[in-house]
Image: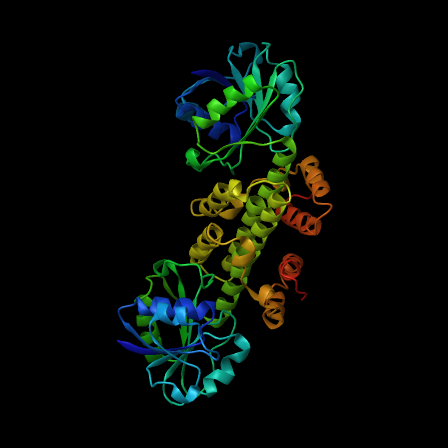
Length: 253
Length: 253
């Protein structure tokens, strides 16, 4: 069992804790969080919690799941040396500490009160040496079979892609919901469409899967939509994404 | 059995044909298409095809699945009166013909070579009189339990929402794929994230489900991403969607 301490208990930390608890090869000893964690969450995870770095337990691996800006400061407070210290950021380089530095990046969207199937999450790993890589690979593989060796440069591009296919996509869902709501239409009517749109790209690539007025260069429908959007903040987004679709398919609106 | 003729065999027509063939209450007599349909597709549907309006068979219902601009012209060529004529457009009003006009709008993204579960597709219906509505409702219900009475105004808003949650979302997938490809990263790494993003909004509303740098007002990451995007066409889209996320959540970047 790989003795592990988790530092940070936000959305990412919560799900790393849950996935570590479920993994055969990982013994989650303790979770540090800078503020007291609610009792019901502590109960759900069922592991020792602390808010005091002086009480940090000795472990093989420290997983850092705090905001990018706070990572360096947090790592300096680990009162042990020669440990594996793995951050979970999509953006940052390998750390340069006196520990064995690593990256343990789960590519998923995490929200505390939304359960997840950890077995499908891809883990993108990087380490400063082979021994360290072997340990975090063993950890990741005991959570999910989808484990990838990914350089910092590639991870940064993956993170950027994830902003498009997850954060921005979710915002488009939010716009769709806003439009439905303001016209007394149940948003659930769009559920099958949303699911199929995501599902479709498993068998077609997104360029083949594209449909809609911008692809068809159906300017009449586009103009009607822009007219419908007049009272919202979304005409620019509509225009820009439509132009971008047309451009990607070698057309111009 | 409701005797039905389908006019138009593009992406929508193909799937309407397949779903009608599978429905207990519908007898699909014939499909008209302005050009000859490939033999293998004809064989797949296994129904009489024609390219000649003079050979159109008499039926209870004519479903029109052609481009919006062509609908009126097509309807005029139906050589029978007092029939139900239902268009499948998300945008157009009820027709004003001398037939019994209706709307039979399946809210889904259709591509010929992508199979679909018709039982989850919502059908948005409208008709000029109750008798007509009863017939198309019976048809729709024999395909899917998700049948909604939707006015033209609501349907137009649904169609607009669908552009955001489907066509634009798919384009963001295409951008994600482009970024991955140009950095030798397999796009499949993003599959679980794409699926979870779509899945998440079944239990959380999209505003609660939002994550990412724009929500966190993480300007450092945003700037890094804009820098990574410099050589692409996508900086404006990134900027605009990030600003829109911030605005929707009461912030400003």
